[in-house]
Length: 203
Image (cartoon, rainbow, N blue to C red; front, side, top):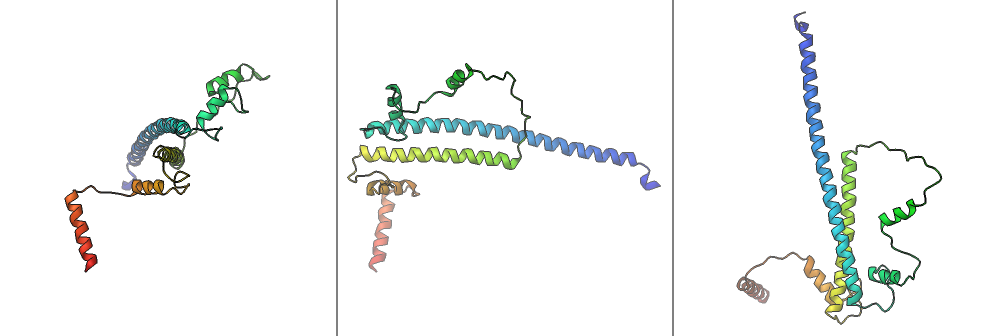
């Protein structure tokens, strides 16, 4: 009987421990949620910057290598086509499109059902972040590709087609330099190393 003399004390202690653990877990989860929210906002803003840069570079390409006829996926060609009211596709801002479509309501006046707010798991949060990062990678690749073409035409490379895809030797050489890690040393040390290398080859 002595061993169970104070069962309420043990129950209260266990409940207190559970409460503390629950509080810590909830607090950590709230901190993680705030961090994820901040990451989403930063990635979204970076995405906007990347898109603006990429779009401007595509437009610069339009004038660096003047287009004699409309080019596919060229923003500047698209704007010129829209201004002259030709073409089968028109770019309309989302807000303006919603406004236009909202001026013609459906027959049903029922309000849309409100979906319950779902809490994402850590794995789902990470999947969403990975998707956003891959989107940034796609934007960055577009910028790299466009700038490579602009550099090709502005420097007037001898090869007919630009970039690695066009097998331009000058573009390929530049890309290799850009992605090769380097370390800055003095010219004196560099020359000495070259001399030692040469002497080693002679021997």
